[in-house]
Image (cartoon, rainbow, N blue to C red; front, side):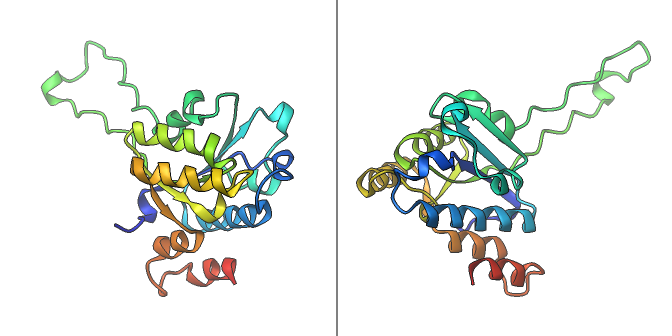
Length: 201
């Protein structure tokens, strides 16, 4: 099964600068996260960010926040506990208020369901804490979860790799930044091919 750009949303979890000094290869992970965010902007993929306790840990990089529709400040390790699911799956539109002149129920059209993309591409810090708990909750919410392994890290490789093992066992797909970009494109004839390709050269 390939990742479908039309059914994708991107979630960037807690790329906060005050966390970076303690992490394994954080600069590479941030660079890949920025590639994902730039490609998402080029291809029309909605992008969301999260920040864990930003008063203590600081914000995500401003250039990353600029590429996100919104950034969720949170205290729970799982962003799903604090409203991420509502951003990813908006509520259905409210029914219009009825009046005496409205059509009989059998002639009324049902409201259109709210559209949302169900394939959630996630990456972030730390893989075994906030990324893991957010991704597992997204799976519980019946989203498809695609974890970008070269854009995630933890303080140790062992913690990071344990998170990947657990996520794969739970049903998440594990992939890399380049896998995401080329699956979103599908073809060298895509109008944004050169622009996306430039992100990884």
